Image (cartoon, rainbow, N blue to C red):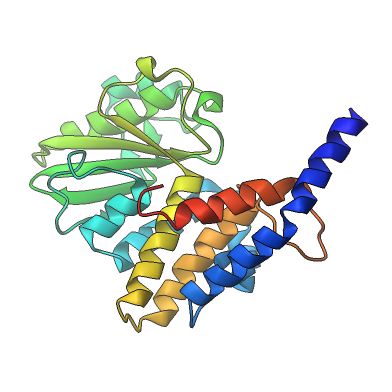
Amino acid sequence: MQRLIDAACQYGESLRVPLEEALRDSNRNFAPLCDPLNDKLGTHRWLKSAREEVYSDWLAWIFETITDAADIRSILNLEASDAPSLSQPKVARELFVWIPKKDAEQLACATTRQRGTGRLDLDIDVGDGSWMLIEVKLDHPDEVKGLNCQIVGYKNARDSSGRGFKQHIKLVIAAGEPGNLSKYDSDYHFSSWATVCQGIRRVVRRRLADGSRTYMQLALALSFAGAVERNLLKLATPGKAHQPLQYAQTLRHIQRSERSNA
């Protein structure tokens, strides 16, 4: 076992120079900002929280700031056909949605909250009577008990509200895709945190290249990506915290974010 660890460390160490070069190139591409892994704001204590609400609130702020439909699709890894009515999205952040009594039993299998109340992480009005229901999870979806019926409970609450919703796009942001997609309806979409961060990187880089001067908003969006990359994805950069085992994953992550479609 130790030989395997030593070999992996040697391989990671061989990527130190390519990773340093990739980070320098990325810094230039993000000028006057910098690569989010080099951004100290991402280590702020408010961004290091393990609570899902913190991450969903930051995502809501990003979508309120970056309102372009193509950019939101890029961040969420959605095709235009997945959300054809996404033209002028509006984020609705309701901390709790009331689940009707008939659906409370269904929801109970997935939440510790009682009396039919549950929190919907992110609710986006995508126009034309359609809504995107986004559930944010820090774990892998296979490790989340009752994820399917949890979102169905929220959907049923929306359907019974009398607000005339035509369509729901159910999106789960988690640590990866489930091993068995067949247990989910066909209108479910899954996006990993790595994909979301790569999308944020592309959107910010494109906006800077187009001459955007909203540096504060773009810097905060990058800081959120950097916090996720360090705290959830465990990416590492060469420095005092010597972590060569993560160099390969970090290098691939940066390279994928520089492609038009990761």
